[in-house]
Structures are given as structure tokens and as C-alpha cells.
Length: 99
Image (cartoon, rainbow, N blue to C red):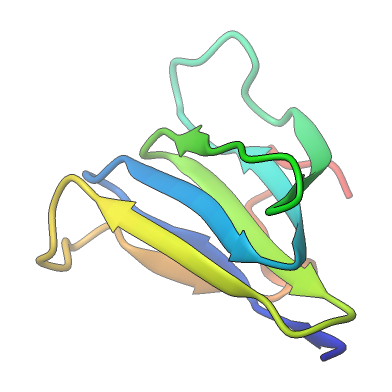
């Protein structure tokens, strides 16, 4: 409870996130170079009480946080790490990402 992750970025793998128990808050930042929404930042919540999932495209950084215990199903189109995979603290996000 009360935990938060760093921003994770997968360079070549889409992910699907779905809560199995609890509620998770996500902060998404588009870091894709050619995306018309580059730099856009969105905050959303997913809750297991209202079954839903999120497709997270590669190149979009994601931070997870919750003030409760959460079980989260996390599927990825690739299991291997790639050269462009990265983790960022809030202050270390690339310049194109507003805070």
C-alpha cells in the first residue's frame, strides 16, 4: 500500500495492464518521437471492481501507484529487454514530456 513505481518505458513491446484486485493509478507520458501526442501526459485509474484493461503502446512511459494492495495482470508482446527500454524518475523524464 502507498507504493509507486518509476516511469517504465518499453522501446519495442506493447503491454496490456488489467487489475485483478484493487485499484491502480497510472500516469502515462507519450515519448514516441513521431507521435502527434508526443509529450502528452494522462492520469487514469483502473479498478478491478469495474473490469477493464489498458493497452499501453511501446514508447509511452507509465508509472503505477496505489494506496492499497493491488494484483495487476501485466502482459507484454515481447519478454526480452531492448536497448531502448528505460526507467525514469519524475525529474528525469525526457524534455518533451511536460511535468
